[in-house]
Length: 387
Image (cartoon, rainbow, N blue to C red):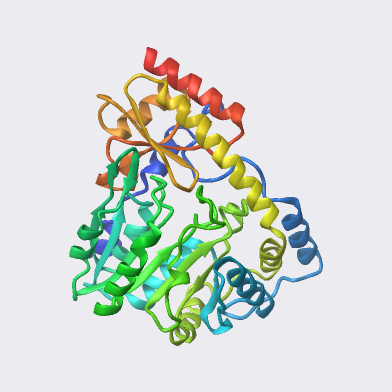
């Protein structure tokens, strides 16, 4: 008798350890939750109002596979303002979330047995999505130097061989906050051009960057339209729209028609009325993004200083994102530690092992919360360590 199970590559996927730790404390009302990557403030009112009006006006029908024309026009204008160069409409597609964009581009360019390279630690979906498609994954570990995470460019170049099909880069990075140095972009792009490697930039945190620029350094500022570059992005983080499930892709024009077909056989299209909310976000959201960025920088400083005051704690400075990645000296495996903190301190953080073996021993704290919540979390951690 044949077993009614999924195929071997799916059975081999890692279950989300973020979900595992959440399940351990989800039903407890006393838990302070820092394990998920989202702000504790709702989506800005102007986005909600525009979307609610569209819904009540009856915008509930199918739309174009690639997204409504007016939304892609708004995205075209937004990208041009942000990156200082034009982007043709024939390069843009709307997806049902950022993670959906990663799945779509993977389905479009990755075949079973392909070698895929990714820098790590990293959000587990980035590694597991190519594995669903039976790709062979190779990780390049980030290093720590002078209080920051860094990429050893030589190690990455050694991994980018002629048999590499795709490179996934998440910068600013979840969970570490590492951000690719602007001067490293040209070398990486040139290596990908040389070997025909698809460069898939997971740019979800590009607006949550703590440097002097409006956004983190981007390959979109260097690449030609015909390069094998796809930038995937989302409305979730910068516009506080995690529950809306809306994202986008920027790609070579020759890929766009095929992407429309892939979208058709996945979700057909993004919801009509939510696309109206996305237009409002792109056209009128800069003040809201600036406010969020200022809040994050303030809470980053609060949480990091609080962590660093505790004995045996190492907390590395993030250059972007919304996370403090830290470790407690001599405290053992990160999953066991995170579960113990839930049980004994009612404190919920994500285990570093959720982001691959490169993150083992570390913990991730999402600091995109009101200061009183972060301060109470620090107090509970202090008591936990003291006990």
